[in-house]
Image (cartoon, rainbow, N blue to C red; front, side, top):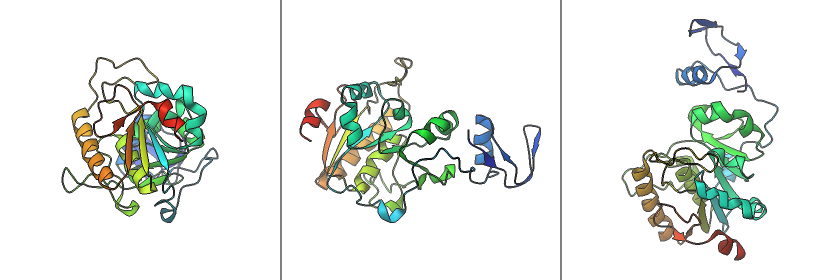
Length: 255
Protein backbone atom coordinates (compact mmCIF):
# COMPACT_ATOMS: atom_id res chain seq x y z
CA UNK A 1 0.00 0.00 0.00
CA UNK A 2 1.15 3.58 -0.62
CA UNK A 3 1.24 6.08 2.23
CA UNK A 4 -1.96 7.85 3.26
CA UNK A 5 -2.46 11.00 5.32
CA UNK A 6 -4.66 11.15 8.44
CA UNK A 7 -6.94 14.21 8.27
CA UNK A 8 -7.96 14.39 11.94
CA UNK A 9 -6.82 12.96 15.26
CA UNK A 10 -8.12 9.38 15.24
CA UNK A 11 -8.18 6.55 17.75
CA UNK A 12 -8.73 3.37 15.75
CA UNK A 13 -8.11 -0.28 16.59
CA UNK A 14 -6.54 0.86 19.90
CA UNK A 15 -4.00 2.94 18.02
CA UNK A 16 -3.81 6.73 17.96
CA UNK A 17 -3.14 8.47 14.63
CA UNK A 18 -2.46 12.23 14.90
CA UNK A 19 -3.72 14.60 12.24
CA UNK A 20 -1.23 14.96 9.38
CA UNK A 21 0.47 11.60 10.00
CA UNK A 22 1.60 9.83 6.85
CA UNK A 23 1.38 6.10 7.30
CA UNK A 24 1.06 2.81 5.43
CA UNK A 25 -2.04 1.00 6.73
CA UNK A 26 -3.09 -2.62 6.65
CA UNK A 27 -5.84 -3.51 4.19
CA UNK A 28 -8.88 -3.69 6.49
CA UNK A 29 -7.83 -0.59 8.43
CA UNK A 30 -7.38 1.36 5.22
CA UNK A 31 -10.87 0.47 3.97
CA UNK A 32 -12.48 1.26 7.34
CA UNK A 33 -10.75 4.63 7.76
CA UNK A 34 -11.48 5.54 4.16
CA UNK A 35 -15.18 4.78 4.66
CA UNK A 36 -15.16 6.83 7.88
CA UNK A 37 -13.71 9.85 6.06
CA UNK A 38 -10.57 9.94 8.22
CA UNK A 39 -8.08 9.86 5.34
CA UNK A 40 -6.92 12.56 2.97
CA UNK A 41 -5.82 11.67 -0.53
CA UNK A 42 -3.00 9.13 -0.46
CA UNK A 43 0.48 10.55 -0.81
CA UNK A 44 1.38 10.42 -4.47
CA UNK A 45 3.93 7.64 -5.04
CA UNK A 46 6.83 7.94 -7.44
CA UNK A 47 5.74 4.79 -9.30
CA UNK A 48 2.77 6.37 -11.14
CA UNK A 49 3.72 6.50 -14.82
CA UNK A 50 0.49 7.76 -16.41
CA UNK A 51 -1.21 11.04 -15.45
CA UNK A 52 -4.93 11.32 -14.81
CA UNK A 53 -6.96 12.39 -17.85
CA UNK A 54 -8.73 15.73 -17.83
CA UNK A 55 -12.51 15.41 -18.39
CA UNK A 56 -12.49 17.43 -21.62
CA UNK A 57 -10.18 14.95 -23.38
CA UNK A 58 -12.18 11.81 -22.55
CA UNK A 59 -15.31 12.13 -24.67
CA UNK A 60 -14.68 11.02 -28.24
CA UNK A 61 -10.94 10.52 -27.77
CA UNK A 62 -11.11 7.16 -29.63
CA UNK A 63 -13.90 8.03 -32.03
CA UNK A 64 -14.48 5.42 -34.74
CA UNK A 65 -12.15 2.80 -33.24
CA UNK A 66 -12.73 -0.76 -32.10
CA UNK A 67 -12.23 -0.92 -28.35
CA UNK A 68 -11.65 -4.18 -26.50
CA UNK A 69 -13.00 -4.67 -22.98
CA UNK A 70 -11.02 -7.35 -21.17
CA UNK A 71 -12.63 -9.03 -18.17
CA UNK A 72 -11.04 -11.56 -15.83
CA UNK A 73 -12.95 -14.70 -16.84
CA UNK A 74 -11.13 -17.86 -17.98
CA UNK A 75 -11.48 -16.96 -21.67
CA UNK A 76 -9.01 -14.09 -21.22
CA UNK A 77 -6.36 -16.80 -21.55
CA UNK A 78 -7.06 -16.61 -25.32
CA UNK A 79 -5.33 -13.23 -25.29
CA UNK A 80 -1.96 -14.95 -24.85
CA UNK A 81 -1.93 -15.95 -28.53
CA UNK A 82 -2.67 -12.37 -29.68
CA UNK A 83 -0.97 -10.40 -26.94
CA UNK A 84 1.03 -8.05 -29.17
CA UNK A 85 -1.96 -7.28 -31.39
CA UNK A 86 -4.22 -6.53 -28.44
CA UNK A 87 -1.64 -4.35 -26.74
CA UNK A 88 -1.31 -2.33 -29.95
CA UNK A 89 -5.08 -1.69 -30.11
CA UNK A 90 -7.20 0.36 -27.75
CA UNK A 91 -8.23 -1.87 -24.86
CA UNK A 92 -9.70 -1.31 -21.42
CA UNK A 93 -8.59 -3.98 -19.00
CA UNK A 94 -10.42 -4.42 -15.71
CA UNK A 95 -9.22 -5.50 -12.28
CA UNK A 96 -6.32 -7.96 -12.54
CA UNK A 97 -6.14 -8.13 -16.34
CA UNK A 98 -2.72 -6.45 -16.04
CA UNK A 99 -1.36 -9.82 -14.90
CA UNK A 100 -1.73 -11.07 -18.47
CA UNK A 101 -1.15 -8.06 -20.71
CA UNK A 102 -0.62 -4.34 -20.65
CA UNK A 103 -3.55 -2.29 -21.90
CA UNK A 104 -3.79 1.41 -22.64
CA UNK A 105 -6.44 1.72 -19.93
CA UNK A 106 -7.23 -0.10 -16.69
CA UNK A 107 -10.47 0.26 -14.71
CA UNK A 108 -11.36 -1.08 -11.29
CA UNK A 109 -14.20 -0.50 -8.82
CA UNK A 110 -13.31 -2.16 -5.54
CA UNK A 111 -11.36 -0.88 -2.59
CA UNK A 112 -10.22 -4.40 -1.62
CA UNK A 113 -8.54 -4.81 -5.03
CA UNK A 114 -6.65 -1.58 -4.43
CA UNK A 115 -5.58 -2.86 -1.02
CA UNK A 116 -4.25 -6.18 -2.35
CA UNK A 117 -2.84 -5.03 -5.71
CA UNK A 118 -1.93 -1.37 -5.27
CA UNK A 119 1.75 -1.75 -6.13
CA UNK A 120 1.01 -3.69 -9.33
CA UNK A 121 -1.69 -1.20 -10.34
CA UNK A 122 0.68 1.71 -9.77
CA UNK A 123 3.34 0.06 -11.92
CA UNK A 124 1.16 -1.35 -14.71
CA UNK A 125 1.79 1.61 -17.04
CA UNK A 126 -1.88 2.03 -17.96
CA UNK A 127 -4.03 5.11 -17.56
CA UNK A 128 -6.14 4.02 -14.59
CA UNK A 129 -9.81 4.79 -13.94
CA UNK A 130 -11.31 4.29 -10.47
CA UNK A 131 -14.40 5.46 -8.53
CA UNK A 132 -14.35 8.88 -6.91
CA UNK A 133 -15.04 7.34 -3.51
CA UNK A 134 -11.55 5.81 -3.40
CA UNK A 135 -10.00 9.30 -3.52
CA UNK A 136 -6.93 8.35 -5.54
CA UNK A 137 -6.14 11.66 -7.29
CA UNK A 138 -3.28 10.33 -9.40
CA UNK A 139 -5.83 8.18 -11.27
CA UNK A 140 -8.83 9.33 -13.31
CA UNK A 141 -11.89 9.26 -11.00
CA UNK A 142 -15.43 8.71 -12.20
CA UNK A 143 -18.84 9.08 -10.62
CA UNK A 144 -21.45 6.34 -10.45
CA UNK A 145 -24.24 6.84 -12.97
CA UNK A 146 -27.68 6.12 -11.53
CA UNK A 147 -30.11 4.54 -13.99
CA UNK A 148 -33.68 5.84 -13.89
CA UNK A 149 -35.07 2.45 -14.94
CA UNK A 150 -33.83 -0.92 -16.15
CA UNK A 151 -33.57 0.30 -19.75
CA UNK A 152 -31.58 3.42 -18.87
CA UNK A 153 -28.26 1.71 -18.23
CA UNK A 154 -25.98 3.69 -20.53
CA UNK A 155 -24.52 6.99 -19.42
CA UNK A 156 -24.37 9.37 -22.37
CA UNK A 157 -21.60 11.66 -21.16
CA UNK A 158 -18.58 11.63 -18.89
CA UNK A 159 -19.97 14.24 -16.51
CA UNK A 160 -22.87 11.88 -15.67
CA UNK A 161 -20.48 9.13 -14.58
CA UNK A 162 -20.36 5.48 -15.61
CA UNK A 163 -23.01 2.84 -15.09
CA UNK A 164 -21.37 -0.13 -13.45
CA UNK A 165 -24.18 -2.45 -12.33
CA UNK A 166 -22.10 -4.73 -10.10
CA UNK A 167 -19.24 -5.33 -12.53
CA UNK A 168 -16.13 -3.44 -13.63
CA UNK A 169 -16.68 -4.77 -17.15
CA UNK A 170 -20.04 -2.96 -17.35
CA UNK A 171 -18.37 0.33 -16.42
CA UNK A 172 -15.62 -0.35 -18.98
CA UNK A 173 -18.20 -0.87 -21.74
CA UNK A 174 -19.84 2.45 -20.84
CA UNK A 175 -16.40 4.09 -20.92
CA UNK A 176 -15.71 2.61 -24.37
CA UNK A 177 -18.95 4.19 -25.59
CA UNK A 178 -18.00 7.59 -24.15
CA UNK A 179 -14.58 7.22 -25.80
CA UNK A 180 -16.47 7.15 -29.12
CA UNK A 181 -16.05 3.48 -30.08
CA UNK A 182 -17.55 2.34 -33.38
CA UNK A 183 -17.14 -1.29 -32.26
CA UNK A 184 -16.84 -2.83 -28.81
CA UNK A 185 -15.40 -6.32 -28.37
CA UNK A 186 -15.50 -8.38 -25.17
CA UNK A 187 -13.00 -10.98 -24.02
CA UNK A 188 -12.94 -12.56 -20.58
CA UNK A 189 -16.45 -11.33 -19.73
CA UNK A 190 -17.77 -14.85 -19.14
CA UNK A 191 -20.05 -14.65 -16.05
CA UNK A 192 -20.49 -18.43 -15.92
CA UNK A 193 -18.96 -19.00 -12.50
CA UNK A 194 -16.42 -17.42 -10.18
CA UNK A 195 -13.32 -18.80 -11.93
CA UNK A 196 -10.76 -16.25 -13.13
CA UNK A 197 -8.03 -16.60 -15.73
CA UNK A 198 -5.39 -16.33 -13.00
CA UNK A 199 -6.96 -18.96 -10.71
CA UNK A 200 -8.64 -22.32 -11.13
CA UNK A 201 -10.60 -21.77 -7.93
CA UNK A 202 -14.26 -20.86 -7.99
CA UNK A 203 -15.50 -23.23 -10.69
CA UNK A 204 -18.30 -24.42 -8.40
CA UNK A 205 -19.31 -20.97 -7.21
CA UNK A 206 -21.90 -18.89 -9.01
CA UNK A 207 -20.79 -15.42 -10.07
CA UNK A 208 -22.20 -12.90 -7.54
CA UNK A 209 -25.17 -10.97 -8.95
CA UNK A 210 -24.68 -12.65 -12.36
CA UNK A 211 -28.37 -12.43 -13.32
CA UNK A 212 -28.48 -8.69 -12.63
CA UNK A 213 -25.25 -8.06 -14.55
CA UNK A 214 -26.34 -10.14 -17.54
CA UNK A 215 -29.69 -8.34 -17.69
CA UNK A 216 -27.99 -4.93 -17.50
CA UNK A 217 -25.57 -5.90 -20.26
CA UNK A 218 -28.47 -6.95 -22.47
CA UNK A 219 -30.21 -3.60 -22.02
CA UNK A 220 -26.90 -1.82 -22.59
CA UNK A 221 -26.42 -3.77 -25.83
CA UNK A 222 -29.86 -2.60 -27.02
CA UNK A 223 -28.90 1.04 -26.51
CA UNK A 224 -25.49 0.59 -28.16
CA UNK A 225 -26.93 -1.22 -31.19
CA UNK A 226 -29.53 1.54 -31.55
CA UNK A 227 -26.62 3.96 -31.89
CA UNK A 228 -25.05 1.90 -34.68
CA UNK A 229 -22.20 0.47 -32.62
CA UNK A 230 -21.11 -3.05 -33.55
CA UNK A 231 -20.83 -5.45 -30.61
CA UNK A 232 -18.66 -8.55 -30.47
CA UNK A 233 -18.12 -11.25 -27.87
CA UNK A 234 -14.89 -13.21 -28.30
CA UNK A 235 -15.48 -15.43 -25.26
CA UNK A 236 -16.66 -18.85 -26.51
CA UNK A 237 -18.53 -19.75 -23.30
CA UNK A 238 -19.87 -16.37 -22.20
CA UNK A 239 -23.32 -15.96 -20.62
CA UNK A 240 -23.55 -12.40 -21.98
CA UNK A 241 -26.39 -11.78 -24.43
CA UNK A 242 -26.70 -9.07 -27.07
CA UNK A 243 -23.09 -9.19 -28.30
CA UNK A 244 -22.46 -11.20 -31.48
CA UNK A 245 -20.17 -14.20 -30.96
CA UNK A 246 -16.98 -14.25 -33.00
CA UNK A 247 -13.51 -15.76 -32.75
CA UNK A 248 -10.81 -13.47 -31.44
CA UNK A 249 -8.37 -14.37 -34.21
CA UNK A 250 -10.94 -13.77 -36.94
CA UNK A 251 -11.84 -10.38 -35.49
CA UNK A 252 -8.21 -9.31 -35.26
CA UNK A 253 -7.54 -10.40 -38.84
CA UNK A 254 -10.06 -7.79 -40.00
CA UNK A 255 -8.21 -4.97 -38.29
